[in-house]
Length: 122
Image (cartoon, rainbow, N blue to C red):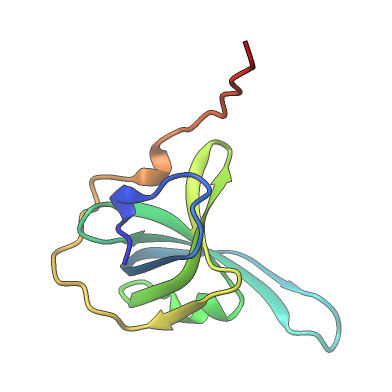
């Protein structure tokens, strides 16, 4: 089980149990007349070590509601404009989970900026 404070850019196959502090739907779009709508929400999720933005898609949006405790299985860290965000593509977002300690909302890992540095051969 990973913690938010230990997340680094481009990590994959992570399992985290977090509490949804805030959830905002950023897009709902119909794909076609018979296709289901595409939903995307940006959620601020926290554990005892910090908070990070989690991008929920489609049915994940229904699970990741404000105040809910969720478990992210198979999560990965994506980079967006130099900042880390969590997403779950091939894994699962499940309602429930057990957070033993109070959440920490003062350490926002999505506010840290990372820069790709290429080290050349000498």
